[in-house]
Image (cartoon, rainbow, N blue to C red; front, side):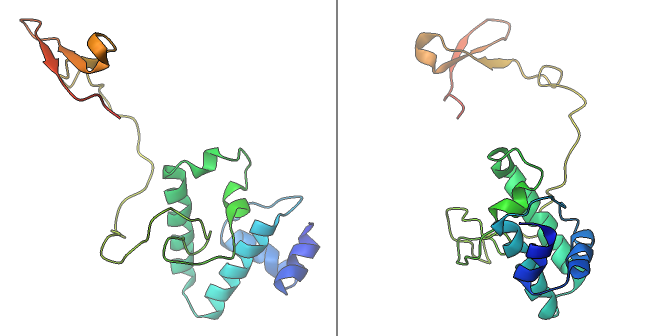
Length: 161
């Protein structure tokens, strides 16, 4: 659907929707899908309920980053991947804005809302420079690691998952 049809679907004007896209840094498209309509409706509902703009932006940013950490963005290689996965479903195992089912229930005591999900730069030094001499290999049944110590002993370690 085009921008005009998107605006009609959410019951707002085209300039209102364009302003909303800029305000929340949503990806503008030539053709909008149903998920985009759902996200715009949810953003409008939150603003009607007097949720501060800053809080909505933070929620949108954190939810998008969480889904990137879960590699949901790699399922669809399109610029508006987040907008396209949004559904109008709710539940204790679903995220608020996208409606994405993460597979387990979220409880207030379990989620640490202050976690830093920002992107990080690469480490200055690799594992070898840090003194890690253990490497995993597929020999002897695949469950051993050879310690590169002075005596060249073999140590049984569980294979990393």
